[in-house]
Length: 451
Ligand SMILES: Nc1ncnc2c1ncn2[C@@H]1O[C@H](COP(=O)(O)OP(=O)(O)OP(=O)(O)O)[C@@H](O)[C@H]1O
Image (cartoon, rainbow, N blue to C red; front, side, top):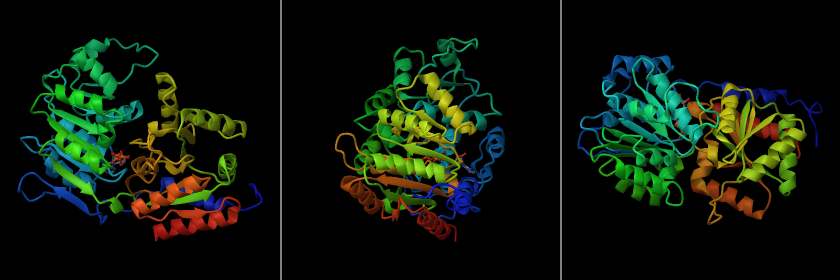
């Protein structure tokens, strides 16, 4: 195999480097032809806004939105916000592709429902990971910057005790908007540290994952059962299996619904590839070569198990690559440090498990590698939803991105083919041993996309 210096990788490098920084084409999300199926509970014609002003939310919220650089609503925001903000409030089951701005839609709804004179929890949002909960809170604080909103994060406390004045009880007593993970939120509600009496809106981000009966479903249901009867229930995700959608309909009754057909689910600006490796060990050699030969902006490598993440991180470090590693086995402080470092761009390569498959938004990520393909833990069948969420860590809000799947035996090849069939999107083969060809294939596919 040719190593760096033997071939000119600079032009491909340019392509991959510019991918992450490439701004979305003007209005690309709004003009997308995605066929959203909308079911509204009223007979009202579905309103769709073209500017945030039309929503008639408080000017301090508009100020926050504009300071975030949002000049106009994305397609899901344009369609969902008028329904989300209706009085009296109506439930919502929303679906749109990864990176299309679902967070801002529910954050704005939560902020606009709060009575700032009432010092009691009024909006609650659950997310499946501490990293996603913290990220949502950053968006809340940015959008609510010009409002007096008081917020609290209900995630496992950091190992380093906070030095700021308030105790946890005091913090939650005065908080109006809470974002957290289900275990911690349930515990705080049960111990009456979070007062549920005035709760007006309950949001589940990554709702299909939060309602999954094999996982977080139990806790989400218990929390929902504690909410006041008239609390607005809002569910958002890029994916809903048929089974989960049926259940979601019971969890959020009489909801306005947005859904997508399966062939509309994958983001068109994410180029999907696969590399046919000889065996497990060859996967590592190809990974090492990829990072030796290409200068990649920022990237995420997904593996199935924590042990694999540790092993790959150690071996990549031994090979001289600067990588970081995040999984559920780390302490809360370590997790926060790793994630914050990656967001700052201190580290360019993040090795992780499914814990970061959903929701994480780092715009500079231009490459996602599925070192291990996502499998359903119990059935060992392809996990289509996780696949879509993983590759959706790139190609955010109209940007272009590349995803590469590693295949190493007949079974993993079948999984890639099943994923290709499921979403009806080609996953293009690139060789593992000829970097000139790799370069030209990646370039051709990327230019097809940009033309
Ligand atoms: N109206 C807007 N104008 C410009 N940028 C926006 C707008 N709305 C959201 N964004 C940005 O788009 C990016 C993706 O948004 P967000 O993280 O909400 O996507 P998402 O739909 O929740 O994705 P996922 O399904 O992966 O969770 C974020 O960086 C966000 O700040």
